[in-house]
Length: 305
Ligand code: CP
Image (cartoon, rainbow, N blue to C red; front, side):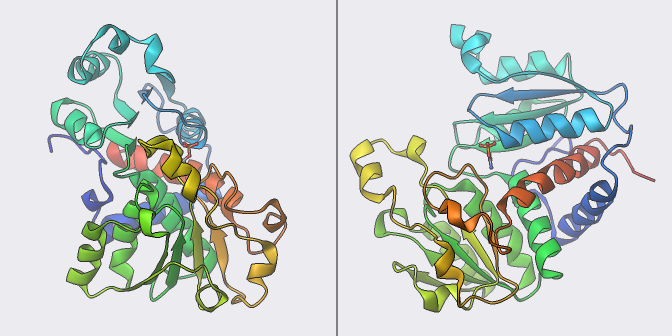
């Protein structure tokens, strides 16, 4: 790679992850530092987003940088047939870094190969969402005080959920035990099970979202069924409400259990969970701003001290 792009969580070693976490902690202590003065950051969102785009843009604003970009590709010349390559080459003329979300798996990798400035993948299809992983790992560290030897239960759409795929890889450095809870149609892809097998990472698959699983869990990672990835909406209808976490289901859980969700949620976490001290998903989203400040500075080789 010709620049310091972040396309997949596999671009980060364990040492990189720990370094970014350390940097994130500093931004958590003080998010307002004028480290991006004179820099222009482009946010190219070919797919909808609330928190990823807004937390990236808030991160840039808090660091004194400027933002250009779009939130709807229909308003850009890609709607006239301009290729992704030409779009990236144009934005290279204007911006110091590109933050991009695209519906096609591999789009961020391709962009990083043609771009002269770093590309940060803000989600490519059902593939990867590495900055979400970094904020998830930071949230896990902040709530558990360690990343090592944790039991992580992932629930819902483990087939299309890109945050799940990235988190399996990101946490693989820290000897986790995974429980994958999904209906048959949405099981975690074989490639991620093979990844775990090759590294001796323990995992179990479950169809039932049972108290037995919840009660041995440190991190309960709920996910939304990804309606936009289904080609047959009848298939979506069959599985859309397959698991719904209710507050009473946490009654026998460990004191340190925290419920995470990349958000947005639809029905998979009942509103009654929100006032549980174990609900952490809104703080998790806030951590995204600090994490993205760290990722941007790291990609641009900007040091805090
Ligand atoms: N978690 C996440 O990617 O949220 P948005 O789709 O709102 O950016």
